[in-house]
Amino acid sequence: MADDRKTEASAEDENATVRTSRRNFLKFSASGAAAAAVASWIPGQIASAREAEPVTDDALPGQGERRIKLIVNGQEHTLNVPVNAVLLDVLRDRLNLTGTKKGCDLGQCGACTLLVNDVAINSCLSLAVQHEGEKITTLEGLARDGELHPVQQAFLEEDAYQCGYCTPGQIMSAVALLNDPNLPKDDASVREAMSGNICRCAAYKNILAAVQSARSRMGGLA
Image (tube, rainbow, N blue to C red):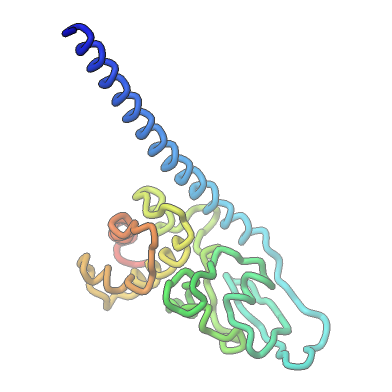
């Protein structure tokens, strides 16, 4: 009888070990897959920016349209756009710069954050015609000479992402934050400055670590 109980206990322990090993395998497989996806996605954004050609509309503007010049990631594009077209849609649909994400479309989640004249804005709330001649920087324009921007590199090293959908906006807000020498450098101030960017996967601890890591390697300047 005692031997039977011992056998049952051993079998139960073995099953528990199998369950734990399986859970760990799934956990690390998922995190590894996410890391691989983001690691391959960011260099892809670099390539797309490098290979992109300036876009020029040859036709005259149609009814309800205006001809504007947008300077995006150092390239000048001449486009006929509806006067009510938001910048986010023009970048994604006309220029194929899909690094900037459409989240809530209400200016509340921060997924569409990009830089205009080095200042972070929600591109889903901004009309394209408002930004003629201004310097627009998207995620695709951060890298230089095939090298990731320090903030991008820090996000990779600190695992500051999970699903990755909010990551472009988080990175752009972090760049703007680090470009502002007047902002305090303590963790609480960084959290406050980044509060407009929502991460539904709740990777906030790692995002904070990435921002502070990037600050250290850049000497406080982006």
